[in-house]
Amino acid sequence: MGRVSTTSGPDTVSAPALSRPPARCGFGNLRSMVMSMVVVLAAVLAWVAMVPRVQEISQPAVDVTSVAVQVRRETGWAISQPQLPPGWKATNVRLESTAEGARAWHVGYLSPGGHYVSIDQAAVSGATLSWISARTSNGQAEGTLSSAGTTWHKLSSRDIVQRSLVSKDFGAGDLTTVLSGTAPYTQLAQFAEALEPVPAS
Image (tube, rainbow, N blue to C red; front, side):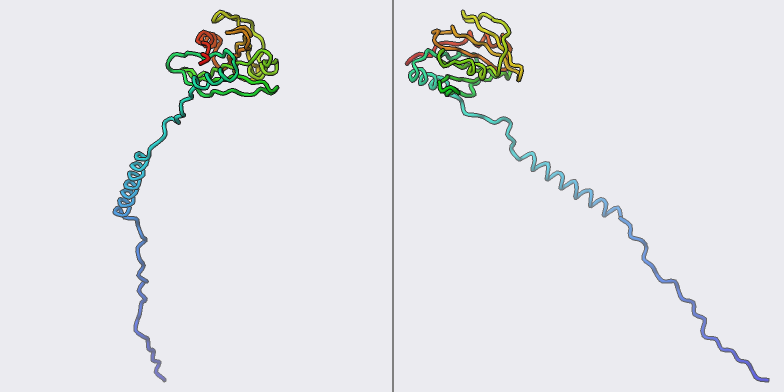
């Protein structure tokens, strides 16, 4: 009877592969990130604080008086210029041409309350209905008021917020005068009372 021999190799059990534990964000890394963000934010805020910011755009002063005297000499018109209290600011002044080729004197102001008020004057012969309509933004009649010894016709635009006073008898009487702007009629009347004739020299 033959022998049955069995041989077996050494018992080997494969050890489980060593695996690295999942990476975790340590408190040290998180703390460093937060501190870095704080430093960067502080630097940005410091830079913003040092950058100068423009609070108000300043415009050069408009010399109405010198232009008014020049217009007075050039045209011979007895134009008017307002003598306004402190706080009013002249924004523009010019001698311009109308659509019909006539000339007109214009000065614009900004009131302390932020209302725009202007005076336009043209010779009666050149102050056509179309010129008056353009100056008053197609203003519609709303009665009259008395100011500075003159009866003014009140006109209000239906297109924009604009009120106007119109007179052909103000001052020397040879000019048509239009006062207009965003101011109420009461302020336009006060503006009319501040008008004074520009001296010839």
